[in-house]
Amino acid sequence: ARKQAERASQTAHEDLERRVAERTAELEREIGERKQVEHSLQESGLRLAGILDIVYDAIISVGEDQRILLFNQGAERIFGYARGEVVGRPLEILLPRSVRDMHRRHIAQFGQSADWARAMGNRREIVGRRKNGEEFPAEASFAQLRLRDEKIHTVTLRDLTEPKRLERERIDLERWRARGEMVEGLNHNLNNLIQGIFAPAEMLCATAGNEKDRRRAEL
Image 1: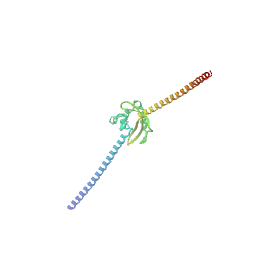
Image 2: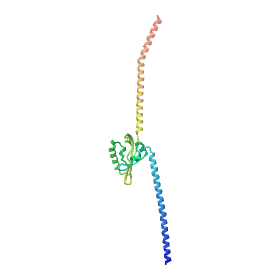
Image 3: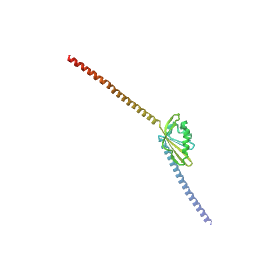
Image 4: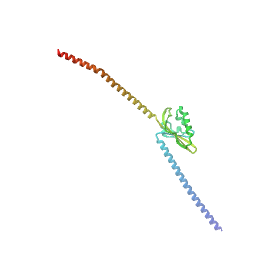
């Protein structure tokens, strides 16, 4: 009986060790898979951050409290702020005071949408404010995304300062070109008018001269 008990105990002990070893192997596999997933997520996050940073436009995301969550390098270049200076601060620091109330109303209306993700519409012109206080024209599109119980608002913004300047220069050049063509036309008409005045006089002088020569020849 004692030997049977020892064998049973030995068997139970071996069975326990086997189960522990199997469970340990399972845990190691789970830990390895979890690390792999975390590594993949980290790589995806870095890849996404890299993509966002090479985008020339500004990409800015805010939470429901309108505080900045994401501020890419394009936004740093356009607004003149470093990322650490604006993350966690209200989006209003990037807007002129004159449009902040209107912005709040637009966001409130947009936030009433029941859709989890949708675009606010086509790109529209807005006015931004740089760190140095300079206001500038911009083209922006807005989108809303619901992540669990939180709504994320994202704006993609393009600085229109240079395109607007080039457009003004083009318009000014066309105006000067039109004025030049008008002056050239006036000069042409004036020359025609002058020729119309002096040509008969020249013909009259030539006729008178020929008449004098004829009379002298007869004498």
